[in-house]
Image 1 (tube, helix red, strand yellow):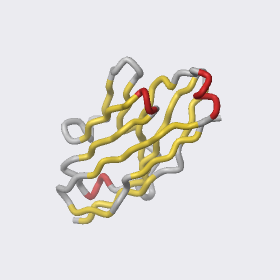
Image 2 (tube, rainbow, N blue to C red):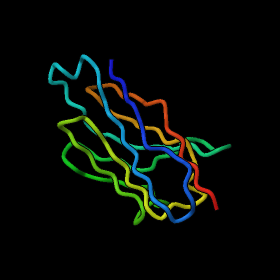
Image 3 (tube, rainbow, N blue to C red):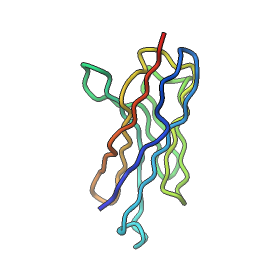
Length: 119
């Protein structure tokens, strides 16, 4: 089993920045099981969960069009941690942000961290 713990969510004003972190842990990781792609998703009030950004172990990156140029995803594979630097935040970025990681054949989700952007 793998646990994902997100942190960094907060209440900010339009134009400000936040950095989210997500750390993967679990006994299985001590057996050199590789964490493959790690990514971020979000669910805004009244909407379905949507893709935000992802990064593979080799460093290939993908972003949703809505965040390109504002958000930057990165990872520290040695720490099994993924980050999301969010700049130029807008009220429409308000959502619960979830971390997702693929470990072997399975994927895991974190419990989410709230990001609220006031206008």
